[in-house]
Amino acid sequence: MVDSSELLFEIKILGVPVKINLVNYSDEDEAVYGQYDPDTYTIELNAASSPLHQRLTLIHEILHVCEDLLGLSNLEHKDIYAISQTAYSISDSNPHLTEWFLQLKK
Image 1 (cartoon, rainbow, N blue to C red):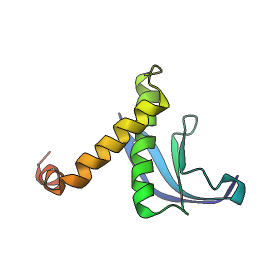
Image 2 (image 1 turned 30 degrees about the horizontal axis):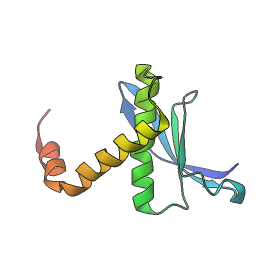
Image 3 (image 1 turned 135 degrees about the vertical axis):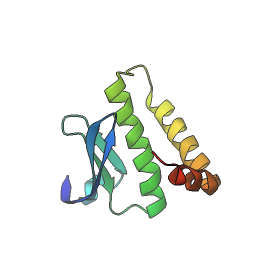
Image 4 (image 1 turned 45 degrees about the horizontal axis):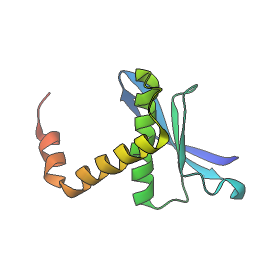
């Protein structure tokens, strides 16, 4: 159960606006790190999680959005987990990649 929710920002994935909310879950939901609601195109991140865990969870949930929008129903949750961990590791281990990407002109 959600006690409160705060909109952090909105991103577009394949042209679809997706809201990213920071959520305070009630105690019984403490194990929930995040979730994606395909009906409202909303990703929730647990406010009680560490910033690192929130970043990892956001990448994981973004992949669930891509899975939903692309109709990739054959992916298992363990596949999403492995891809999200790998994507985060690449980003975290190569800050120059992010810097280069941000310097490119549209």
